[in-house]
Length: 151
Image (cartoon, rainbow, N blue to C red; front, side, top):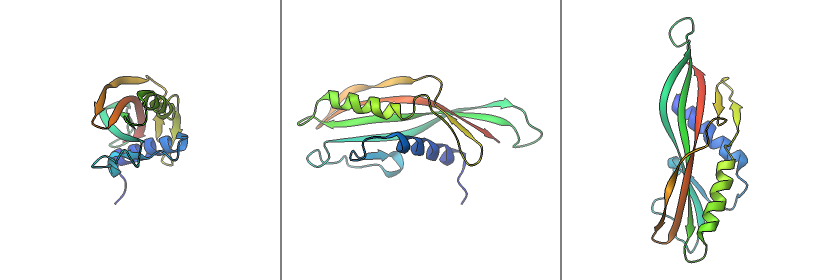
């Protein structure tokens, strides 16, 4: 099966994150390989759980016929950092969240199909409410993106 629009966009977001992530010893789970139940804080004192969400699609320019229009698919990369409460502080979660968002900020890439993935617009759209989920400090934010394609 050929990868569809949404999977292609998601894979581009994940690749961009992987290329910029500077903490290879910290586990990063994406929605596609989610860690359920959460890892044991005795063995993983900090980890990230990321996901890609999709929003509206917009026609930017009309082409010459069906599936020949320039379009933009909007979405967001959500980053949540879990830091073990018994050994780490919320500061660890906040610092790692900053590093994770820096993987996207101001980035624009072109894939092999000529489609453009861009994080050069607005920054974080919301912050995940700070919470303590049992053994974890949890902090998160999102970065919005635009994926331009012909379709």
